[in-house]
Amino acid sequence: MPIVHVNVWKGFSSKAKKKVIEGITKVFTDMGIPAKAVEVVIHEVSMENWGVGGEQASEKLKHHKEAYGILSTKSQLQNNTCALSESSRFGM
Image (cartoon, one colour):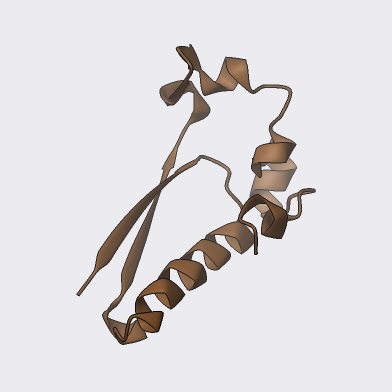
């Protein structure tokens, strides 16, 4: 059974997670593997603990959080909403 680990920034919306899980599962079912055999584990990592181009993502991308599907306010995190259309982020 395939187990796929996906690392995302903390605050990734539930809607985006659902799309990632569905999309990865589809890749395997298209290869003939039953969906019930596919496991997807999503790990949320804070932007402070993620480096991009030699800098913390929290600093390098602080003006682009919405473009990366990151929920930036406490109320957004609690409500799992995001202004971004996640489908454009994943090309779906």
